[in-house]
Amino acid sequence: MSLDLLKGTLDVLILKTLSWGPRHGYGISKAIRQATDDDFRVEEGALYPALRRLEKKGLLSSEWDVTETGREAKFYRLTTPGEARLRDEVATWQRYVRAMSAVLLAERPGG
Image (cartoon, rainbow, N blue to C red; front, side, top):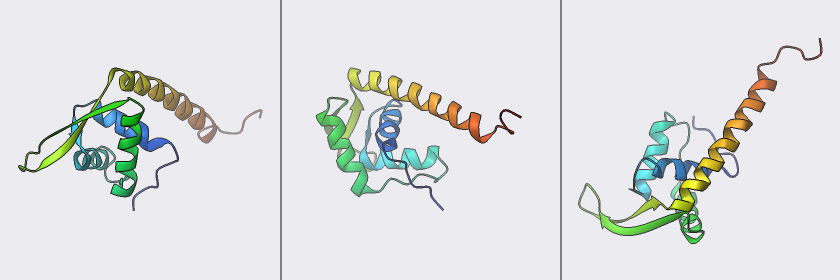
C-alpha cells in the first residue's frame, strides 16, 4: 500500500530527483517510486502540473530529447535557483523530521 504525499512534498521530491540528473516525467515518477520502495507513487495528474509550476517559477528548465526507448519527451533539469530551493527545502525537512522524531520517540516528558 502506497502512502499519500503530504501537501507541499511533491515539489521537493521532484527537485531532489532532478538533482541526480535530467529526467523526463515518467523517469521522475519512476525514480521517486524506486527511492521509496513504492511507498510514494506520483500520478501524472499531479506530476505534470507540478513540473509546469516549478518551471514557471524558474526552478526547472526543460528541453525536448529522445528517451532510451527512442521516444521524444520533455526532459527537466534543475536551474541554479532550483538547486538553492532544494537546499532550503532539505534543511527545513531535516528540521521537521528531527522535531517529529523528538516527540514520537520520547518517553514521557517532564516525568
